[in-house]
Image (tube, rainbow, N blue to C red; front, side, top):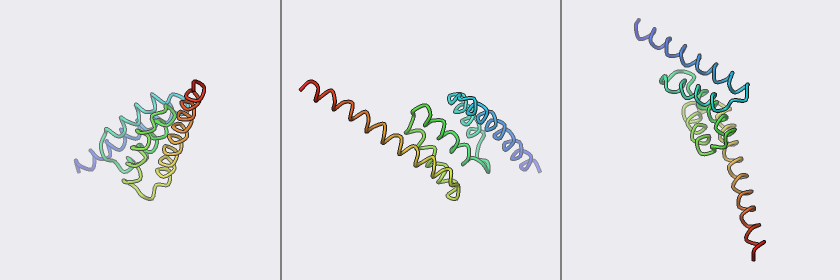
Length: 116
């Protein structure tokens, strides 16, 4: 009985953090959203932990931390291979990081050609 109550309490605490993270995300406060999604993950393994990783991945993309976004998306997919948003987050992290690297490279080459 005690184990079931402890599990329910963890689930409830994690969901409360997820809800706060979602509210922060909707208010365009990605840093606060990351904090709350991290707290939800830190509560421990719950039935929705793949969602918390997926949500944090989206928030990481918005602040430009593409490696962390990719890592979280990968965790989400590894935990629940049927969670389609995990694949969406993973693809987004890869795509945005590639575009960012492309534009940075192009910018650097423009300086090379400008001064040569």
